[in-house]
Amino acid sequence: MSANTSLMPIPGPIDPVPVARPVTPRADGRVELVGLARDAIRDALEEAGLEPRQAKLRAKQLWHWIYNRGVSDISLMTDIAKVQQPWIAERFIITRPEVIEAQVSTDGTRKWLLRTHDAHDYEMVFIPDADRGTLCVSSQVGCTLNCRFCHTGTMRLVRNLEPAEIVGQVMLARDALGEWPSAPQGRMLTNIVMMGMGEPLYNFENVRDALKIVMDGDGLGLSKRRITLSTSGVVPMMGRAGAEIGVNLAVSLHAVTKEVRDEIVPINRKYGIEELLQACADYPGANNARRITFEYVMLRDKNDSDADARELVRLIKHYDLPAKVNLIPFNPWPGATYECSTPERIRSFSNIIFAGGISAPVRTPRGRDIDAACGQLKTASQKKSRAELDRLAEEKQAALESE
Image (cartoon, rainbow, N blue to C red; front, top):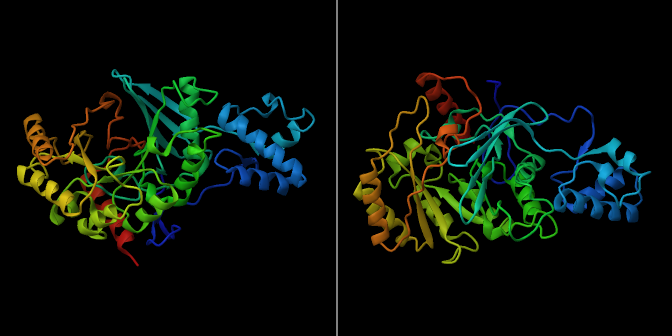
């Protein structure tokens, strides 16, 4: 990955973040249909030369074949005239992310290493449970942020994933699970969490547009109640996420004091805990039926004391938040400077929060043996020294804080 960075504005009322390169156009010049809304498909067909009524009909047919049937070969779309199929195929393409490697954990968790059309790698993870199947979807190649306990945070941000590459992860999982055509009942892939590589709210428009396709009842058809977007605290975008996407919100909190959160989630230096929790209180649609999830990684002797637990309860009650807390045992990775809290410490922490009337389950680590657990996703295999990691973190922080 390139070490060169430049400042590039991200849409929305937020500051520039380092983006190494823009998206390279497809080499064959064809237009990718995956990731386009219905109207955008129709517009693209019109621009290519179809008259409006024909374009509207073909867009409806293409949408159905792509998102309901999972078909990527235009010659298999039987209600599109055979004489027109080559014309469409010359100008448009329907793809999935390229699979470089697929791994299966001893606990059934699956991880895919994927590659974009311009040769950048990213990952997604599927976690099967008895009552659900959750797909952990990435939003960026690398990550804007530099959370110090997170392996992904040690990567430079290469670029944002496009809607096609975000929707494509869901479609690829459907391929692997044999879940075409789309059906609302009886499928393994029931939930999506935007918790893979990257900070979703620093790629807001692409994430929004992709999730609208995922939630469309005539297409992939996942309910917004089955989708959770996780943010480390990009406060200015949280209201827009609630209003324009409307999915469940998860917040990577991980600490209850400024000193500790500044260290382990450095975006806290820009948007502090109080500002973040007020944004949670203002999040559209949050209520006791759709609680905000606070993610809290358990780091030994760093954020895991009884006093920390009591302060977490106090903060949630002070802001009157409909919330639950997911306690995440730290998943180690090469070069990490933290250790996981002891089981006894985690249990005590959880008990205090439960005693405060707030649900605080301990998340069972999944996929650790294939580095698919929370905070472990990282496609770059090269090792970095502590000095290199510190320097990269400082560069990211400086870019985030620049005006």
